Image 1 (cartoon, helix red, strand yellow):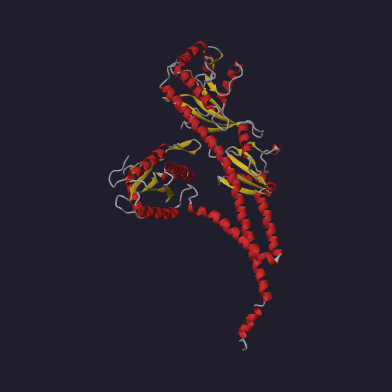
Image 2 (image 1 turned 60 degrees about the horizontal axis):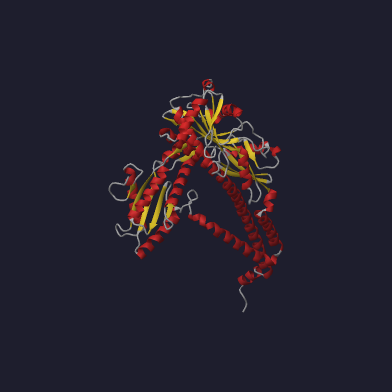
Length: 561
């Protein structure tokens, strides 16, 4: 039977040769598009890896600096406690007697057991009287001397308790000081004391210079451009009963920070680190060729400065190098990482890039294997998408479940608890006055507060409990197997830990935050529906807010303070 004319026309257009050519064209186009997408994904993964490696080093450095701030606050609190309640040990009272005998000498030192505590170095009454910054109050001096001896004990105990070496000082306005760096000879006491007085960390803590009496960071500007020189220092004034006694200082030599950066490069695929202060002056670098100073030309330097004015984390391709940076939370510094093209080609990403180029050539040159290569590329893409899929479940700022994932998890857990007739409690939590944090300190400070709060929530709840961020500053916690009483105890621990945490939001500004919490459980009404339970907890949360905030409310009556 003769075929109709339309079928003959279709057969002509679908000849095997034309079908093969069309398939080849499709394969070539698809393979090129897929390869290009792989290039984009690979580039994104490379950028992420560079920022991740930089972030690890930056966070390690920030943790060391934050530890220094915590230690400095501990020293100050201990000294204030010692001034309030002086110890009556015989050795401490001997310090006062020794001082009365030595105070007229030009330079002196007092030490009893240098294996347990540090000696006190001092100058004469005449030196103190001739210096405007100094003041020797005979009524306060005995307690300050015994306090200084106790501080020397704390200094020695904590001298080796940090991965990043530091030098600790207490410089008193009464004409003496304590240092973890011992004086080599008595003739150097006066020059050393005078040098400490002239440092910005001391002069900058005068009451008219630091009215908040908070922590301040300083960097040495005298040796910029020289390898492994200078210091980064954090200081805080010691005040008690509205009297300024002196200054506590922790100083990090830049050479030791350099060692930390060099050590951080071990195990990484190349890359050099440069550390800048808040004014983008170079402090130290792991670059071997120090003659280049910053490692950037004038135009590159200006480009980086412009980028860093708007972003705390970023990266930029500069010729054959990829430069990533991250601003440090402490002392306003900036850590920069330089990764060259040669280092990239010899690393894992370089090997992948070369392999990807060869695959693309193989796609365009060998028709018979194109379908196999396409299948491999698609499989690789699916594998990569599956490995990244988990990111859709978590909030990037807090690392807790996001709203959608949390509600899905809550539905499963509530149904499971209902089926097994288990206790099931819900805590709804909201940060108090969070808007004022954003208004006064900016959204970066707000993000830092939310991140700290989420960390304390995660560290407080049990392994079987689930927490999620369900709003801007609002969190929800599921407690399978917990009764209302147990959930209230958990909520109280969360409230107390967040209230007791002092958060450094800017260089010299810290603040405390509070939270309001609403608690309910399924046993109250026999209702295991999560949305109903969350509604009850949310109602009690706002009852806690209406009654003064910083409270846990677990009934529809008065909240628990």
